[in-house]
Amino acid sequence: AQSVTQLGSHVSVSEGALVLLRCNYSSSVPPYLFWYVQYPNQGLQLLLKYTSAATLVKGINGFEAEFKKSETSFHLTKPSAHMSDAAEYFCAVSSLNTGFQKLVFGTGTRLLVSP
Amino acid sequence: DSGVTQTPKHLITATGQRVTLRCSPRSGDLSVYWYQQSLDQGLQFLIQYYNGEERAKGNILERFSAQQFPDLHSELNLSSLELGDSALYFCASSGLGAGENIQYFGAGTRLSVL
Image 1 (cartoon, chains in turn purple, red):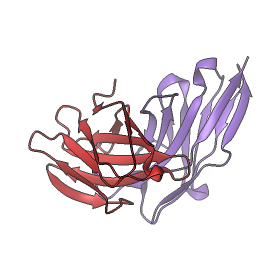
Image 2 (cartoon, chains in turn orange, purple):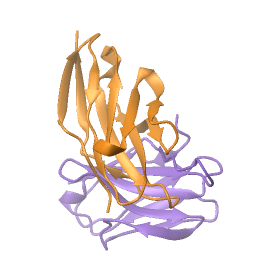
Image 3 (tube, chains in turn orange, brown):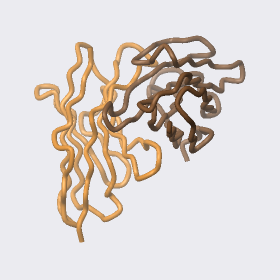
Image 4 (spheres, rainbow over the protein chains, first blue to last red):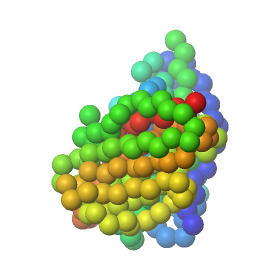
């Protein structure tokens, strides 16, 4: 079975500060890993994905994540937070070896950005 | 815009009733997934269809059912509704082939059971 743990249900940063959202996964097979963002009253938008190519993955809006197999982690970072980054962020895992698999989501981290 | 369309955006109904949620996938996508997002359960996978056939089942109640039609749109039917069924229901679609294991989400249908 696969699972995702997101540490911290809320993370608060100041505008311009580093954003770090943590995600650890558990998977018995090589994983696909994803970060999605959900703005208020909207659906989920894909930020970035890891699918066994480069371990450092760059996404939209200046976000990036690094796959670390030894630490079973896929933390999301952004060097400088903007007010517009305030949203809920979800880490998700699915299987690498089988297509069309369900996504298993973490519980989400709400990012708060203060001026 | 993800290209996935869900209707209606909001649905308010009473306990014991039945509702149907509709999803149109991105053009060309054969797979449709349904997820439920609630405060207590988070985002949970319900069911997946691929080209009209059920492919995988998750935490879907027996009161819930889904289908995918020949034109690839999908419907999620929720019956004998309970207060606890109030949630945001998302549909996602994905394509076929290597590198296509990305699910694109619709904006969701917010169901309120009163």
